[in-house]
Length: 447
Image (cartoon, rainbow, N blue to C red; front, side):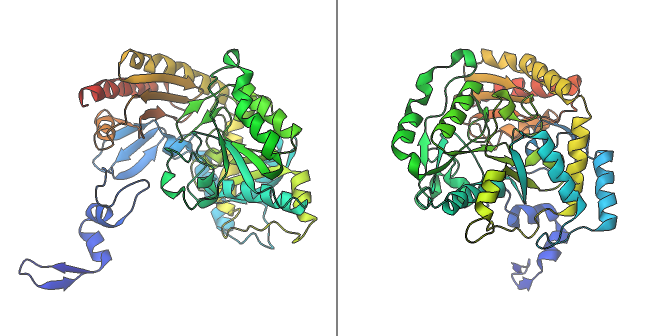
């Protein structure tokens, strides 16, 4: 790496030397953060520690975390039970390949997941992340139909405003118009999209919601491998909520047309909506279930795909006789060990009462935002609170305003939303929502 000295001489310095001189400047110049520009970067805030629901910055300030580190840190940071689970596993082994080998943390986690998910889901495939879990689910559905001799069943059907990840197969089932991956629409597989449900609760249900999907099933079911959707709550595609009856009817239509149903519960799983899994709101079971994010309590990257014996045996009993996927770090023992501890910690806690209390606090605390003319809607479900604006937020201004008020909230597009850790106190939640009300109120004056 070359730089100019004060005298104009060319001097060579290493990246390490630049890091040692000013690591924050090196970060800005060389480290590409998610969804960011290298030429017009937004501010990043150096973190040195995290405890409970608080993130401590290098300058000593503490922020109440409203994001649970992208919805995953449900138990709070630096939890002694999860810390100990990692230490115990580290003393045994940090990693071993899962091809041809096995270990108890992974098998125990599989048993736990089978016990807490709907009964038809009996087979567990571990993956690295939520996006990879969706890739696995899509491959699983397509390979199943290939194994049954239906090689024409290669398309997915999904609803608009959805988000399923950033890898290629996952991007192909995200909203292709106005979504996060519109740029790549010309090179992605062409799947089938229908209008997102408009019903907010079962009282609003109208059978007309299904007209478009019924028409597609009537004419194209023979080429559809699976329907994939986020049950009850659509996440990063727009933070939209919809009624359980829609999900029930989709399950019925899939059964009627022999189409598989994939439930992407990467964001909603493990209690976030007030149910352990969002599918429980509709009392349905998918054929394939994707889990991630909160699976390890936010400690390590890990995801899981659960499916039925019908699908697993259907794939395994036909050429090539194996499922064609195998991540290097699949079922990492450290990740599985902390996931076991996290699931047990959740199930043994009063998580339903905690989520209900957060729901009530969000509803009360965010209510004043409904009075702002630039706010389109405020909606709350479980430990999820959303303030939708009429216009996109200023990402160079708004996050800094939240930091000034001692909270961490990362909005996107026209949405200011929070998914706090379940252990957040009423006092911290009130401080969080008050900061949102203040910043959202100031946002209108900046337009």
